Length: 241
Picture (tube, rainbow, N blue to C red):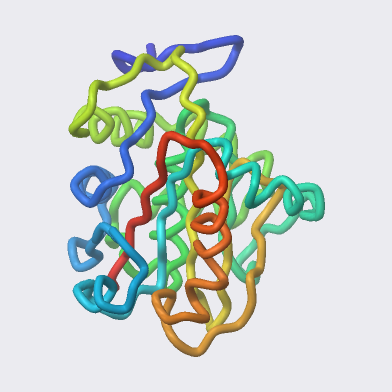
């Protein structure tokens, strides 16, 4: 039996979407067994003055944007990403394909916590640590199935989804928004989106993601697209570690 609110729609397990705000991500981290030393902060503007209020360093960002913004920024990029076939401890990043409907918020947070500083914020002995250890050794298809079948991830997500400030949508409702994680790992910036064919290397970076070069590698294209497109909004969360 699936959790209350989880449905199977056209053969696909489907969650209630998450909101992109610090409270929801903090709640989800607690459910997952992630260290509370990882903190989340709204980015209301990318001006230096506004960014000065955010604790540093910031080596991960979680972006949520409406479909027109996403298409404008990424429609020309998606087809160039080859199908990812990696597995094992030597992977530069741990990337996971999304096969659960409306789970892109969960996938974004997972991509952050399992890759940031090589997963050091995943608490030892937690259920999430067990999942990560299994996932590392699996290929992309089997890895996606591991996440799909996890009752633990399902319950953690659905509990956090009920904590948002807005009206909770039904699983069968069209969402139209996309979550994307950006993570700096071993001096390289990665775009991690379970809806793509694989991870996207954005480049090498000395500073953190809120410096000018870091913003150029991550959210700048989406901000420019938002200025040109008719859309329902976007939001960016900084992850301080």
